[in-house]
Amino acid sequence: METSAVFLNATTTIGGGFHRHTTTASLLSRNPYLTTPFSFLPPNKQLQHQSRFNLPNTTTTTTTTCGINIALAVGVNSPVSSVPSDTVDINWDTIGFGLVHTDHMYTMKCSLGGSFSKGELVPFGNIELSPCAGVLNYGQGLFEGLKAYRTEDDNILLFRPEENAKRMIMGAERMCMPSPSVDQFIQAVKDTVLANERWIPPPGKGSLYIRPLLIGSGSVLGLAPAPEYTFLIYVSPVGNYFKEGLSPINLIIETEMHRATPGGTGSVKTIGNYAAVLKAQGAAKAKGYSDVLYLDSVHKKYLEEVSSCNIFIVKGNSISTPDIKGTILPGITRKSIIDVARDEGFQVEEREVTVDELLDADEVFCTGTAVVVSPVGSITYLGKSVTYGSHGVGLVSQQLYSSLTRLQMGLVDDKMGWIVKLK
Image (cartoon, rainbow, N blue to C red):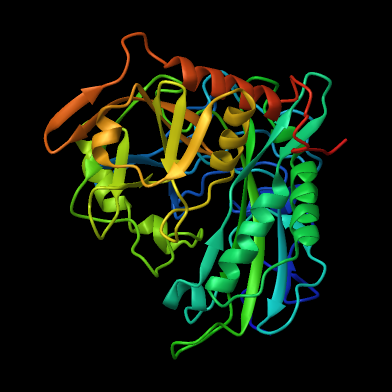
């Protein structure tokens, strides 16, 4: 068994190579990385950089990388206690889309050719990996993203978690990795959300972002699948992904760099797909744009997707989005918006969409787990900009955003059968 274990100043060994303390106030005070029940920013600032946002009673440090202002992950300063309180000291009105350290994470392991066995919840903290781990050397890793919402009657809702489980299974097959079953995935998500329930924002103030990870944690030197795999889930309360919120964003079309190529991994949520967009995204943000829209790598005239979102164009009563053909991620929000739009009387087409059609559209919007629906206010292509609408958020974007978010938050009947209640 590889020693790619959760590292929390271990004094006790638990089955499967996991190490952790018995949680006490004295241990918490000595270990700045241990975030049960509260979170701290380590003085040596070794935690990864995350999107900047402001919270009361927190510490942040800003730096610039690839033209993007980013901030260190933050922890909420609360008095140390061995028993978590029911509330957290966060201003829910100002939270953005950044990392807040919560109480617990979920972990489960599997050998190559084997099956995942029962996992466990452990205190949120750093993990230990061999420098020879497959994910570090050969990028053998996948992630997912979904959200949990708190309702007015204090229930907790998940939105289509089985779709994330199926997409991870599909991605794992492409990346030569074993994957948790759909049932294992969903149960792990439920357990993690309930263990971090106090971090779910109040109704209408945001959501609990859920990040499942599947990584090649076993050691390997030659190019080959890792001998061991780790499935992890951590969570963080979030607000809007774009600083504009539901206000229109401004995109620039990238003509030289590409997100994916035919026969590659563009259709699966592998970690390398996202590192590859950082350079173009950073250059765009340095010029004042919100994000980058990519074209196909062969003809350089068909739309593919934004860095982490699918794109739609509206013309009259017709809504069109690039079809899934191996280079575009099959977004779950994308799939849901297509069904909602058809249910509301729109004609929806999944097909090749050209730049010319984009520039002639009545309205443009993006979809994704983080953004839900984000209206596009302008597109810049080869130095020329086209704006959409003169009254802020387009009518179609607003209608579909309202329909989907009301469903996700439990404000309307779930006639689609998409919601999973945790209470």
